[in-house]
Length: 352
Image (cartoon, rainbow, N blue to C red; front, side, top):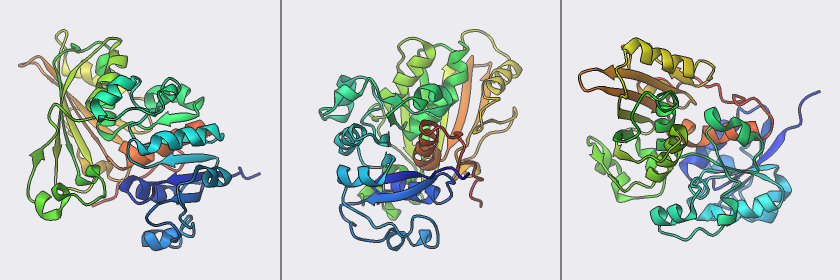
């Protein structure tokens, strides 16, 4: 007997993460998009907003206002693809109405309301939900995700860095102080709204750093690395903007605790991720490229021992929109609904 389709709602469809969710759900065998919301585009057919969906599941969905009662009537699970602060009350309203919720904003990622308020400069309206919200990195927290009503989907930079450092910290290969994460992201990471710094003539044929020491993903990265290290950590996180649409490449530098051979570092990383469907540890001597993960859930990484500086260097690449946001949200929804995590998500990179 065919499995009953899970009815899903998409709150906030006009940004890149909402667009990507709509794209990915067209190929999901167990989920059906039954509601999508937009304040500015309510009343439109989704396929008219995004013509690439025409002829595919979900194209005929009519956009509605983001009203919890309307969403709850039509859905079993909802994805919140809206900015931080906008998701807080919506998440609470939907959870209270019995829906499972995957929140792609930052509102429930940080366990401390005080830390959230310090970095995001706004009061957290529902700190009562923070203890039950599960951080949605499937490789590390699948058992907790399976029992959750509310999952906080990780940020894109924290995903690439956390996966890159899992093996090193879990096996005690590196010191927990002095870690530097140098990350480069495509322009889609800045969102879809019109901003001067994201205009073609401002970005093309250029390369710039931004948010050095102040980026809001910093406390999220530190929170997750501290969990891996079983102790408090601070890092230097340095993001950059690259003139490409999609992708993140993070180069992470850490001091070795003791001399380590390249072969042993390679072995630790390969063994750590041997059973992962999406983390691919490249052979020694190969370095990852963002194009090889474009539009996929894969995280490609290389580990390098630099004996001259006594450093472990990890290069980790993901697609920021799929693995770093919408695809990861569907992976979390799969786990929450008792499906294999890979359902609808074993995708090949979009080449060239």
